[in-house]
Image (cartoon, rainbow, N blue to C red; front, side):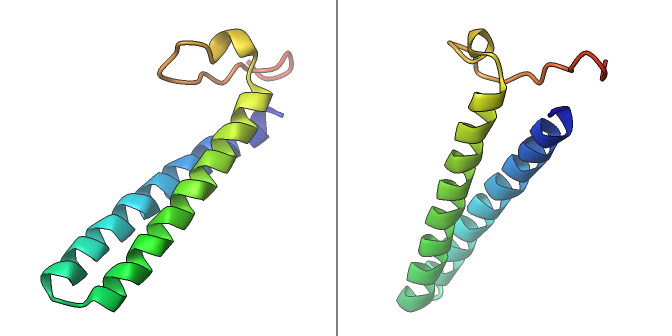
Length: 83
């Protein structure tokens, strides 16, 4: 399960980066007067945000509840065989 947690954390990083990239691309398209392209990039950014939220939801199921309350960061707890 530790490997799965690590994979979810990696995926979160990629989803967040894609979200910010699409938002940046939308801003550039807006400056260039391309509203249709802006709409496409904004839609893609929204999809990345949904992916990120789904991954966070799954990660919270794998992390003990006492580590997710009131914390800004989630910590991955190594299993008994992975220290």
